[in-house]
Length: 484
Ligand code: ADP
Image (cartoon, rainbow, N blue to C red; front, side):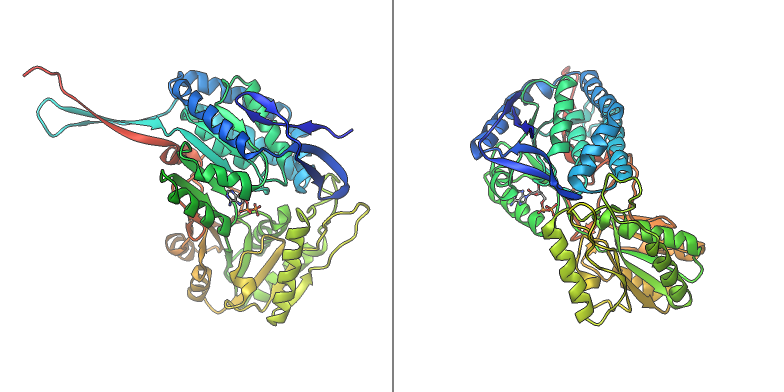
């Protein structure tokens, strides 16, 4: 018997007739659960509940908010194996990656619990004699949180954790492919002691109910992670309504990893293989362009191919698997389309790219490595979001930097080199929000700001103490003694 899960609206679990069937991409015969699709009316009720709860929640003692987030963090950490298995079952990343992501969610909630106690401000002398000014941070109000499928628990945790730490209320709309982890996160936070209405869960289609969030006058801000086209339509809808909402949009990437002649080959190959192919390449920080100087190019390509030969692609819960399946048929079709485009563009498909059959029916694809890719080719310019990487051959560091920056995106970038000169220059001149030296472009710390430049991102950074820039609004208060 498949379990059914409702939406959380004003502290009630609400069922609907319309059910979204959550299927395992490693085994499409495995149904994880049936999740209620919220109606538009449910979303309106959730927003009204959040608005009402905000009056008292925004004034709760910071210690209360701290304790709730810390309790939720502890439950997640304690159940990391079970929650990691659920996550890997619904998203398809390997169990090691699933448990790792759940651990990250626990850590980020604990960090945000601490942030509730560290809300800072300024006290500044006013211009007039006897006038003092204070600058304080206050919560914004009701935040719409809209999340993608590739990090089913970590992204919701770092957005919702920050929103709640600073005293906001939330209406949370997860991606339709991964409602299981979202449901667990919300039920854990509720059990940890959130008052009614402070956190609401509305599952369902982005176009339908996500759009209610972006248009609603009582939603003050939207924090979104997903694709560029959706981000753009959310921005248009959010600005067109009666209130112009604060926006935080994290979108695509086409992240470069530069490998110079003087790089340590083992380090470069590790950064490349992990950054491009693990998590099935489904990370917005994944490396999708390896920009490699001539002197190391052939050795680098051969070493990457040798590593690819040894990788096991299989069921996410099989401990032997290094890489799980693609998340669904539609993403698989996109990957296969780009494999064709790359070959039509005359790039050399040096390794992989075959559809794979396994013991269970799933969306299995061999990772793929294209070489002799030109910067103008579509596979070097467009985000694919799959385990497909392009090697671009360059003559010098200067050319590598120019190619790395020749993209509409700017999320993360990396360089492998043993030269302080090039590392320092690259950190300063790379047009990305995150730069890594001798580290993969993925794999980031939760206490540091996360976000990109150019078409990758819009609005203030996420995570770390920089999250306050988005989730709070500043008040300037003037005080005089009142004695003339
Ligand atoms: P992904 O490839 O991760 O599905 P999308 O950008 O399509 O990327 O979706 C990210 C999130 O945005 C999902 O939760 C999705 O349901 C939601 N979404 C999609 N379209 C809209 C929209 N028009 N308004 C609000 N949310 C949307």
